Image (tube, rainbow, N blue to C red; front, top):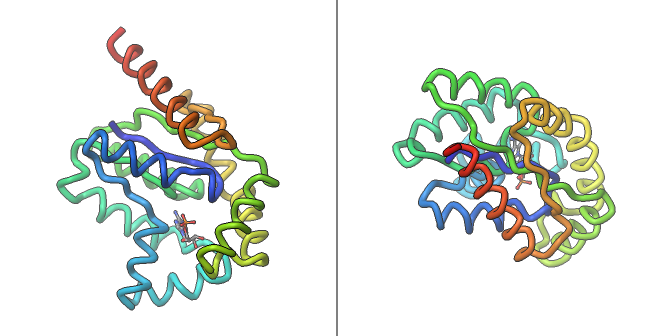
Length: 194
Ligand code: AMP
């Protein structure tokens, strides 16, 4: 199963991806998490990512594409993966298509965690207070939402046009969203068999 989880921050992508990845035995490839690990390890990528991320900006496409290309080559991703936080721009989506094309694979579905801005802002403020994440501070929150609309919404539309987009009601509870995902994947399975 090759899935993308798409949507604004705090839409619950990470929580659902973690659970589903465990259930299916495929890796959850969370780019934000990978960058945080690089920051903690103090690698050159980590130092660059920290500087960019603390302002709420996006890490350059070529850096992200390189990171994902390497990750998808790992043996544990051979039979499937859940991409969480990538692609975030059209250029990243195009690069991903190319990578999958080269290995003769395609995406099964793109789960879209649809969340209104005001709900996203409320949740981000809450996380900023609880975890003190630099990029959850008020100025960074506004910037991240702006970037989401500018760069990532076109990615949503791109996948909508391919018929692979599965919209979810991300403002609902974790359990309700998990049920929606299960139903959507069952439907996909039936379509694949039919
Ligand atoms: P996240 O935890 O997914 O919100 O990611 C944290 C930060 O990492 C983002 O605000 C970006 O600076 C950076 N980042 C994560 N994924 C990407 C991506 N696909 N493209 C560019 N920057 C990213």
